[in-house]
Amino acid sequence: MSDLSQTQQWLEKNKDNAIVQILTTWITGELQRPMETVENIEIVPDNADNPTEIEVLVDFTDGSRASQKIQIEA
Image 1 (cartoon, rainbow, N blue to C red):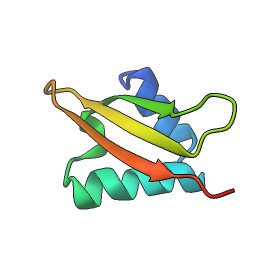
Image 2: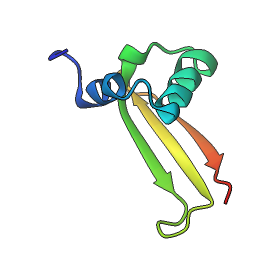
Image 3: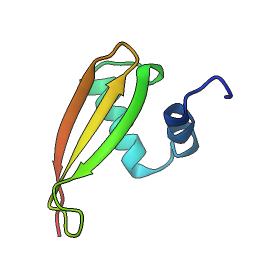
Image 4: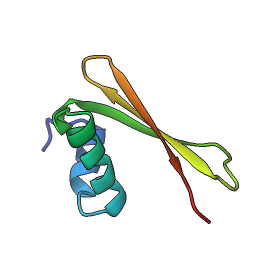
C-alpha cells in the first residue's frame, strides 16, 4: 500500500463508506476508468455554509479530469 498515492490510500481506507462507493461506481462504471488511475478527488460545494449542490472533480494520472454535479436534498 505504500506505493499508492494519498488519494488511493484514502479510497482504500474508506472503501466501505457510502460516498466512496458512489464515487467508485461512477468512476469505474459510467466513466469506465480503473480506480488506480485516480490522482485526486476534490469536492466543491456551491455554498460553504449551506450547500445545495456539490461538484465532484476527479483528476486522473493521464492529466484528464471528470466532473459531476450532485444536488443536496435538505
